[in-house]
Image (tube, rainbow, N blue to C red; front, side, top):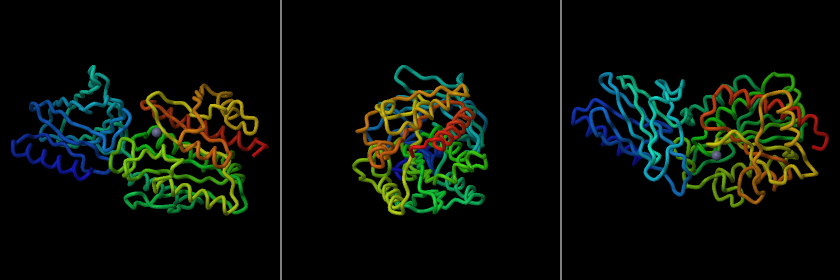
Length: 378
Ligand SMILES: [Zn+2]
């Protein structure tokens, strides 16, 4: 799909060049996504964005750059075919610093297509559904962590396209109890899957005294990027086989979910126990937690109600817990059903302020530590 996309774009670029058009579009970078471009006038372009696989939910991921030989105002229509607009476009010149497009420069029509207005210059302007974080970016973040912390990086398997799947392990030989964090099964879900996840994880491995105490009692197993193929291809949701990984935790038909299963099973064989698991995502209507529909009635473990109580006790954060069936093939249900532990899906919201996402994640992490350290039953 990526090659097709690139071919279309090259054709467009060449045809535009032949017409001496001064505007160029490019998505030939990791996580880039743009299927074709139509020039309507010198100042009005329409870009077409389609999912790599269907069926898929309404979550059009786009990521491309625009540049022009001279400074000019451009109107760009984002056409998702039968799908509706979801993400407020984010703008960057370096793919590191991003800001949402000004609301006065975004118009959404009744069919769900978005039109944006930008000032184009010779410097590439990157326009994406969310901040772009490709495998290169995540792996650089992992490298930084490994420089300073007593954390081990392990290759736990290969993706469909034979990329390494990494786990980060804070493992103590004498400690049995463990928690598991999993992130980015769904490529575009940057707010929870990357920003929230990283802030949460960084608190757990920080030098905060609670975190230090926690790591003496718990191992931390983390898979920071479970769908690297989907991330680099700019997929809306799926892995390279067109499978939604977060619906594969009963069938285990994909190498990515199998890798996690084998990794965790090896830990169990080594004598570890899984006591809590969190799977990080992002929703249009977040933030909230997905929890078992029976979580409040459970008599055995009550980590989640205590955690929520602790979160809300000394802060303005209000936790919305949305119950889901234990039968669904979601990641967190795999942990609940297999290890009889508690687990949640951690959902952030698409357009939540990024600093607030970090603050929430740190506070939730701190209070999960408090809850787990005080829980006598696990
Ligand atoms: Zn998701």
